[in-house]
Each structure stands twice: as structure tokens, then as C-alpha cells.
Image (spheres, rainbow, N blue to C red):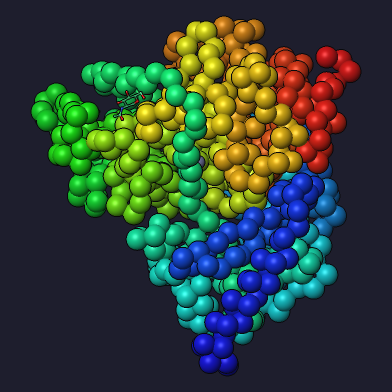
Length: 601
Ligand SMILES: *[C@@H]1O[C@H](CO)[C@@H](O)[C@H](O)[C@H]1NC(C)=O
Ligand SMILES: *[C@@H]1O[C@H](CO)[C@@H](O)[C@H](O)[C@H]1NC(C)=O
Ligand SMILES: [Ca+2]
Ligand SMILES: [Zn+2]
């Protein structure tokens, strides 16, 4: 074996080569949908381009499609799934590994991986949704037919691969069991890789490194961290601080049966630590403690004239973050982000999914300023939110006190877990990462609307800027917000891409509320028929049935299909018109607008 320094050199060279290979000019009709360039390692000096094969995506409308075992009595999710994938993709049983599945409100979801010699592929996957009649309604697949498959016995030891990964990503192996997986590459070969989690607390790195088990080169990365980027915009209007309120028992007992302060067993805590969330400053012992125990009360009055770091302001911020992340848990639970759908809880109460993964929220995290991020590893490992201080004002402001920013971060956990069945690996391309930013803004928007749909500005408080932190308010007016599908031709950064998607979803929301009105109880009652209820159902449903590495086109198709499955297509034309109004019509492709809707609309 080559000496380590030599190995390292070859690793770096391999990645620098990859970086020059991505100099393809934007617009480009393929790379953003299949690749993502990341700067990794100390001082972000190394460029690494990860590849995620395109997902084909088909939806089958209200009626759905039979699977090969449909004639048999009873419905067997695994059997139906494997038989459908085999027939659809013309592969043998030994290529299809059933990974996970669950019963949603009205759909059964199944997630499979391609495998070779019993070794699963990391990035060649498929997902199927069956309706209540057991018919297939959606099918996404990134299975590949590789020209060359690496030998299935590693010639590089795990120890050596770990050393390579630690060096490359400037972090430490976190002890999470490493796996051996095939990796589909963009030259249509399949590499054998050691998959290793590397973390660095100080820099906030948390990645899965894919190290070639024959060459010991880093071939790819899954970055669990979704970062927000906040830039100031030259719009200055009035700033207002929304007041604090005392909320009594805001927990939803349907979603959190043991309340928000259960320790996951039979006991309750008296701190901001519970079954869904632990919020703290510095270390997990830095929770906020109840100011009175009976009844449990967290009564900290934030003092805006003092620095956020004084004790009362820390406790107020920790309390607020705890409240928001629990609320997001409860609301999203009602609409389908449950234990079996790979949510974040310590105790899953026997409802399926992997537990021990409540969200950990680090308030006033010392790793940085003027930002926030959320890391989403696979189901069974905690999601991690880091909120920072914002330095534009004096005193500084606390990210944990801007609800829409906390919701935005939290929603990364929802979209990353629901897409692709809980792996945290399916929103890694540039385009899918952009969609991720869009869902996060859109769900914050949803939470902060009322009976009249208003233009929505995200992030006004933190930098004391009424223009917020995005380029335009989200709006039904194309004057206020001119973003269209074709705007993607000039956008290469995920937040910029996300603004296009969030504005599309804002327009869908406005159309639904215009048509069906607005429910004031939508956060706890998903059974009514107002527009905001319909929107959130379609939001959650579509995440679960869309393919791995979705694009704007396939994400839109998932919304249309979610409506076909849940509402019999009642909103088909409304949805198409809203998407088409911003260029994402029936024939939209390759970032070129189309305003057409189906002929029957
Ligand atoms: C814990 O809190 C929940 C919700 O408030 C309550 O229903 C339950 O009785 C408490 N359990 C204990 C052991 O105090
Ligand atoms: C926020 O902006 C307003 C208007 O520009 C200004 O008057 C106020 O002092 C600012 N507040 C802080 C804390 O910087
Ligand atoms: Ca879980
Ligand atoms: Zn984000």
C-alpha cells in the first residue's frame, strides 16, 4: 500500500480534477439536476462533486396501475413492490432490495434500493406509492445498468478509508456504524465504497463520506447540513417586533401523547428537554428550566435592550426554540410526518420508524454568527439545528427568536426525511437542494398566513430589515415577485433556486385559499376542507411520493398526483394553472417556461 502522504495527494488531485470538470456553464440542462459541487475540508479548499443519478418519475392519476401480483388475495407491500420494480425495470429479484415502507393516511409507501451481490447501492433507489385500492400511483427510480461493477470484496480496509475521510473532511469519524455500499458514478460504473460519517463540532461539518474500497479515494459525499445564507437587501421600511404571548399547553395530545416534556420513558422533565426536542445553549445541560413547576411554566421575558447572551435572554430564546420545534413536530405529525414516516422522536410509542432521534437545538451556537443550519442524518439519528446570533444590530439579535427562521430550518428535517424514505440522502443535487430551501420558506409562509393571503417576507427581524433576507416577497403579483421557472437559468445557488420554488408554492397556496377559504384550526385539525388545509396535505403527501433527487418538474408532478390520490384530482386544474402561471406548465423542461395546462382544464 502507498504511504499515506502519497494517498492523500492522489485524493486531492482526484477532487481537483473533478472541480475543473464542473466548469460547465450554467444554464445547463443536466448537471444541476444530478450533481452538486461542494467545498470541503479545512478552509473549504477542496472541491468535490457528488453525483446522483436522474430519477425517472411516473404518476398514474386517480385510478392507478395494477402491479403484477394484483390478482392475488390480500395486499403484501413488499411483494407488490418487488414485483412491480422487477417488471417495470426488467431486473431480477436479486437486484431489488426492499428497504422500508409504511402506511400513510391514504397511501402505502415503499422504498427500495438496487443491489448487487447483496450489497446495496447508495444512490440507485426507487420509491412506490400505492393507493387505497393497492394500485400504483407513483413510481420514481434511479436504478442504473452499470457498464462496470467493482469487485464486491474491499481491498482497502475500513481503517484506511476512515483515515482518508477524516483527512479530507477535516473531522473525526463519529462511530456511527460504517457500511459497504455500491455507488453509481456518472461514467455509468459502480464503485464499491466504505460509507463513513465524519463530524467536526467546531466547524459544523457532518457528512457521509463515500471512500472507494479499492482505491481509497473519496468519490462522493452526502452533506447532512443544510445551511441558510442571509444577506441584507437594500430595502428599508419599518421594522416591528412582534410581541411575546403566554401560551398555555400548546402541545397537541394527538401528536405528542406524553406532552412535550416526556423524557421518553414514564417520567417528565421540567426543562426544555422532551420527547421531540431538546433545546439548549452550549451543551445539552444548558437547557432552560421551568420558572415554576406546578403548573409547568417557562416565563422568561426577553429584554431587547440587553445582549442576547444575558441569562434571561438565553432562557427566552431557548424556550422559544423549544416551543417552535415542538409545534412544527405536532403540526407536521397531524399531516403525516409520523414515526413510521421517519420523524424525529425519542420514543416512537410502538408506531414504527426508528426512535432516539429527537431534534437537538443549539441556541446561540458558538460556531458562527449571522446564520443557522439543520443537519438531517437518516431516521434513528437526531436532527441537529444550530441557531446563531445576528450581528447587524446592537444589541445583537438571536436567530432562535425569529420564528420563520426556526421553522425554515426545521422544515429541512421534514423534507429530507420524507423524500426517499428517511435516508437523508435524496435532496443532494443542486436542484433538489434548491427545492429544499423552497419548501422551508413555503412552510414558514404557511404558518404565518391568516384569512387573507398576504405577500410574505421571510426574516425581517434578525437584520432589522423589512425587506427580509430573500430577494423578493413571496407574492401572487408578478410585479412584486417576477420569479418564474426560467429564472433558474441564472440561479446556481440553492437559496436563490429555492426562492423560485417557494414563490410557486405561495401561488398554489393563494389559489387554494382563494377557492376554499382559510381554516383557523388547520394546525390541529387536518380533516377540514379549507385551502390552507388542502395545501399542507399536498405539501406533505407530495414529499413522500416524489422521487429521490427531485426536480421542479417531478416535484410538481408529485403535487398533481398527491391531489389525484387524496382528493380524486379535484384540484388538478387549479394546481396546473398556478404552476403554469409561473412557467411550470405541462411542457416546461430544461428551465424553459411553458404556460400550458392540460387540455381538460
Ligand atoms: C407528564 O406530562 C403529561 C403531559 O402534561 C401528563 O399527561 C403526564 O401525566 C405526566 N406524567 C408524569 C409521570 O407526571
Ligand atoms: C432598526 O431599524 C430602524 C429603522 O432603520 C432603526 O430606527 C432602529 O434603530 C434599528 N434597530 C436596531 C436595533 O438596530
Ligand atoms: Ca425517527
Ligand atoms: Zn435552508
